[in-house]
Image (cartoon, rainbow, N blue to C red; front, side):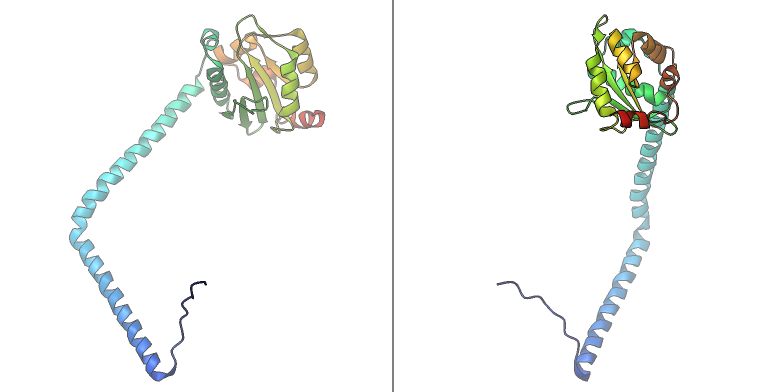
Length: 226
């Protein structure tokens, strides 16, 4: 059996109305007295309150300043970021993906690393105000190895349908097979081999300049062909 809900009944008759008015007046007087007492305590104890609030404010301001300075240092570092091929060759897969993300940020993209299980052939995704969305598949391998056409097929199959990309790029620190480059050029999947990576990472050429990525010109093509 459920618990009965408490219901308030409106006062009936003059005696009940008078009693309710007395109770309301008493509650109001009590509330006023409590407010006055609180103000008095605040007036008497403001030095102690100030001694507590002021350090907290100083600490908060210091943390905000430190965060802003840290972000400014990171932005300045990324603005002049250069990564040598020797440094890239020494990276593991995850480090390589983070490096490509940082290079995109340097070039003016808002980028994030998304690589991992279920990444659907995308390790880094970037957004640009004028050039739309870019999807990068990173292939870090030993120098002398070649990236084959199967990687291009996978990127082509997900860039538009899964990631709604305007541009799709495969980047390696090695080379591509001739078939992979030919197929990629034919189907709008851009590729960055070791030579192009040197120009992007070491020399500082922006990726959109290196590959000639125009403003939002690839989205329709990537989606129609998917």
